[in-house]
Image (cartoon, rainbow, N blue to C red; front, top):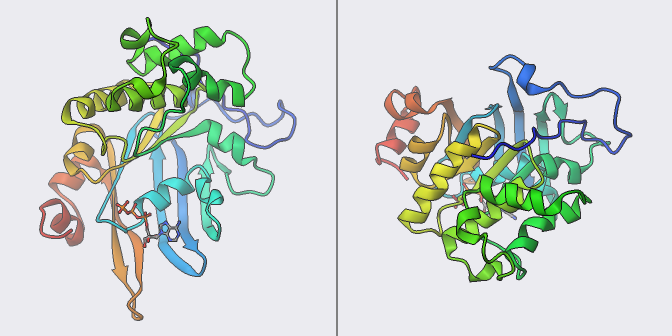
Length: 288
Ligand SMILES: Nc1ncnc2c1ncn2[C@@H]1O[C@H](COP(=O)(O)OP(=O)(O)OP(=O)(O)O)[C@@H](O)[C@H]1O
């Protein structure tokens, strides 16, 4: 795939750039996770939807989050780029670090967080704009004005869509097929050169051929970005991810369900030799 310039790793604060540069992860030890969750609990009002999640997000790898419906996968995913901030009453406790910096610290700008840690949603959601303008949108929002056409092309190539759309860039993004729309949304996300891409069930609205294209694309993108994917599809997790986090919902003494991370490990291990009985029951189809 076409190589893009390496993503921006400056600090996330609104403070002037320059001092305290975050280290370039290419020079960091291979094992250094780009993000870490430490004892993360997420509340909606007084309801604790997810309890005490501790796990790393490894650099330039694909991490899958799996588990039964309602166990908090999307909630945890959204905590990784402060998307929960946009939900009234939602609150995140514990630590979420990006290159060692807590993204919930007071002086951290959530807009910068979401620029570095982008998101692709379940349902392809192109804007009612041209293909070109869909990809250019994030550049505009982030006030990136140089070489917009080149960046749009680069992003569309990166999303494996360029050859299919290069002759119709002025056509509406809504005129594309579902799979193409999802790759357009991926192009829109990578145009601003994030570091981490969060994907919430990105293939659940796609047919098997379009799903396979997006999965191939994820493999390509993992060379350059770190990816975290929520999926209901265990085969997909097994096919695409390097690490897997298995969540479940536990019921407390009052009958309230709370999401819980049961096991985090290399994907091969989760699917062949899980440590926890609950993981084994889930992946063998005995539960959920
Ligand atoms: N905006 C919200 N307001 C209140 N409660 C919410 C909100 N979003 C999620 N929840 C609750 O938090 C819990 C976890 O939900 P979440 O969507 O994160 O689970 P999930 O594992 O992603 O589920 P699914 O696989 O069905 O998408 C559920 O009990 C859900 O009802």
